[in-house]
Image (cartoon, rainbow, N blue to C red; front, side, top):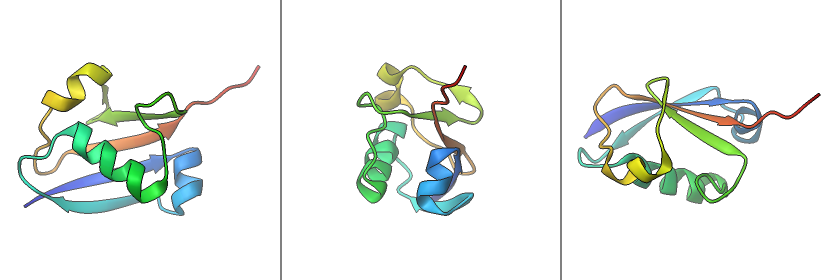
Length: 86
């Protein structure tokens, strides 16, 4: 098992009531699988045109790379919402 910290900012933080949570995951999990898990857990639409975005270790990854990006023990994933204003 690996441990990955998932942090929440903006609307995701309000929606979950959490600043962060640490998940124990299978060692071969990809970012795409984690996002699918989060979508199921919180009824989100990350990666499906929703307003939530994901950063891995403070880096933005193109959606096409999620399926090939394997998570490592100690990784940090940030789920944040788009902010509009003007």
